[in-house]
Length: 246
Image (cartoon, rainbow, N blue to C red; front, side):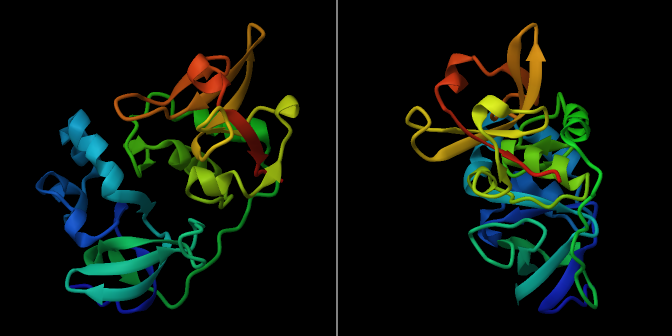
């Protein structure tokens, strides 16, 4: 039985899912909230509608060892914040609920150490390794990933902590003019022909036969893929770019 209490803790399982509330969990989500979660089996069991339904239930995930701060414990659930996943939703980190059984107590939580030698090409190489990964809302692993999770996880694998959501990612980092993009930069897309709310993020992947390319996790039912930035659905909504490597 877990001895976790309020205060610092860490993820004790391979991958825990951050839920908006304990009541958000459906019967089909049992593999994700089991004491020993099987996220791969969970993703495989969901059809298109079940995955789409995650938009109102799940916000993120956290792998083994990631620090959390436990704010409250209610029965088998802990309300936590994730310091390594910055968010405007809470100054301490991304908020949500995880099973208490997925946590272990620690004396303190350590800050991630940025990698000083990483560059855009390194980041893009890591991103390419996720091509073909299923899109899963809130996903943050090889089993399934969403667009901002793709950006976050790729940078995290180089020791760089960036915000979790696309709208936050577009407000941090180094601003890059759209005519000065380099491979590995993040490119952002907004409604209303780029003037509205940001809804998507991808990686600028350089040019292919003179065509600027993007690498991104598109939407439910699709997989991480390459796409020309001239694609009509994205060309009119491209609005900003950011760079997070030193």
